[in-house]
Length: 92
Image (cartoon, rainbow, N blue to C red; front, side):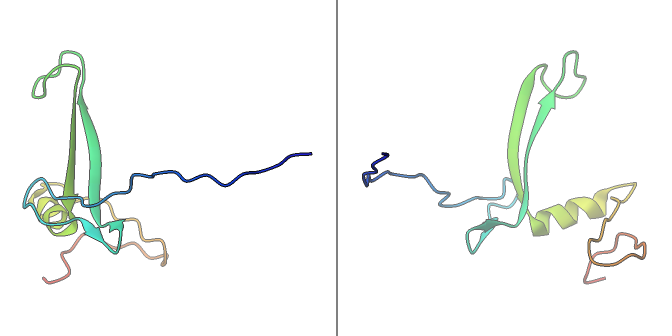
C-alpha cells in the first residue's frame, strides 16, 4: 500500500522580465512577449568573445524595430493561413 502525505514547497516564479534594449517589461499576464535568447561566441569567434554566452531579452517592440533594420527581412511562418506573406511592420 502506498500512503501519501501533504508537504509544502516553495517555488520560484518569474517576477519580471525586462527588455535589455529599452528596459520595459517583456511580461504580460505572466507570459513572455518578446524574445529570450542565449547566443554563444564559438571558438575563434571574430566579433563575440570566444566560448562566451550572451543571454538577453528583447520586448516585442524592440524586436520589431530590429527586424526593420535587417538588410534581408526575416521569413514569416504563419500558423493559421496557407498563403505566403512578406515582412511588414503592422503600422506601415
